[in-house]
Length: 294
Image 1 (cartoon, helix red, strand yellow):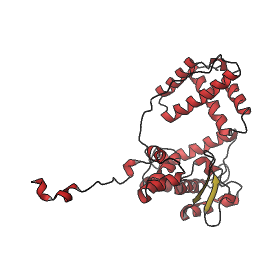
Image 2 (tube, one colour):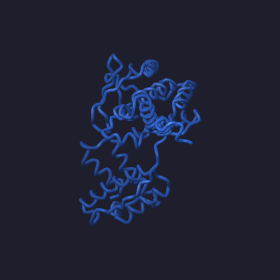
Image 3 (cartoon, helix red, strand yellow):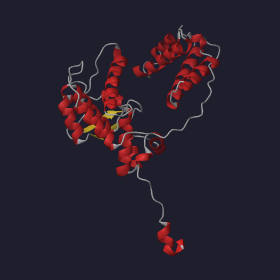
Image 4 (cartoon, one colour):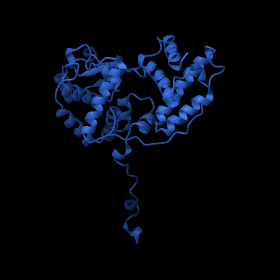
């Protein structure tokens, strides 16, 4: 049994608990292992030594700490499953990597404006027949004004939106219900894009399944961001929404916007501190008076 076959088997036996996207994560392990070795990897090779060497290779190739942590979890899951099926003698023991702390960075408000200007210059239709300009403008408007994840935005239906511009959905990552207000400009963009005339507000396009279709969208998003003279991904809209909300209304408001249970998650992974107004401490010079300087 190959590593990809093992991933498919695990997903098939847990299909009620796992999403189709999670199968992509497990299959990605097989693809990474194939690139690491230059050949198809057998499930019986899921040893501690092999798994740890794969993770070290990922780190040396510049993968982020978050990616390495996720791939480590996927390897542990497949390793336990392989041990359960008697494919390996025991589940692999994976080393823990010391995380490299890197403060989150995102776009400033002027950068958001530049992205929307880049969208306004787009011409033609997407393969799904929707105006490229309004498809991306409306999608970006929703991501920035509500702070929801891209995956949740792509599953949004007109029925999820009430007459007072309120969206009510279940977060695909946490399983918790969330409610957000769509900004007036973002709502107008959605009207221009015809989002309320379809079963899904932002339908994907292209063959090859959902994963391939999402790649087509990611490519379009990347092109617009680069044409605005910026770097980043769609995730930066969520970071920007949190950072700009924190600057206007405080960190607690940003936490609520992102639906985080822990304030530290918001602060450590989403808020760009370089864009926040520094907090001033007590005015010592006023307390002591000018004579203290003499």
